[in-house]
Length: 112
Length: 114
View 1: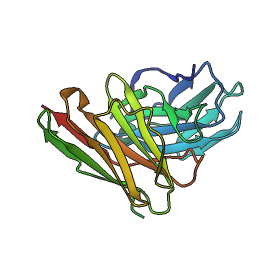
View 2 (view 1 turned 180 degrees about the vertical axis):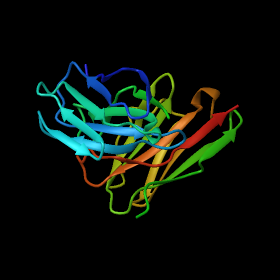
View 3 (view 1 turned 120 degrees about the horizontal axis):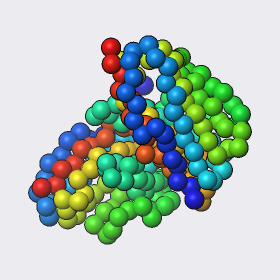
View 4 (view 1 turned 45 degrees about the vertical axis):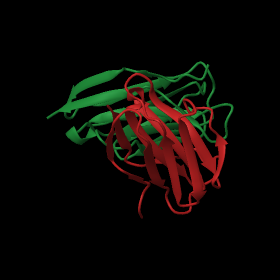
């Protein structure tokens, strides 16, 4: 159904490395959103994608809306310690104009 | 600009007590959402409002949970009576327009029911 599957579940990398994570679904989405959550805080919207094939950047972050509309990718270049957090993908529920489905998240740890 | 404001940030209570969580959405935002986050289930939508009207409360776990939005700048989520399994982080989020999927989250309320 509309379940969003994120991989990897967790990543442990060194500062300076590039990071790549993805989100897949068996259903088609018309919008993909990427959020970051730091410990003790709420999710913060990083990037929103609205068109298949769209590639959008926000600083060192780049996200792509997959051509099949069933997946999305988030890349972080030259990671730094403050990139630590959990990254969630989200997309609108098909039976709702408002509500979002969220993936279970990719936990990122960056060592100096 | 102020983001979504939630209070309290932390709440510890005993089983059976009433708990009230509060949220002030971003000014001018017309949609408000209450989520619950746990390790086991991740982020779950409990209820959302559009223009202060509850649109979908199918995510509310049971009758012990209720939510209100008396005006555009305030919403409450109430649990009565609370149970240990209600322990979680509760987030409020708002979005600008109906159908605008870009939701902005508050810092959350960490609820512990003993």
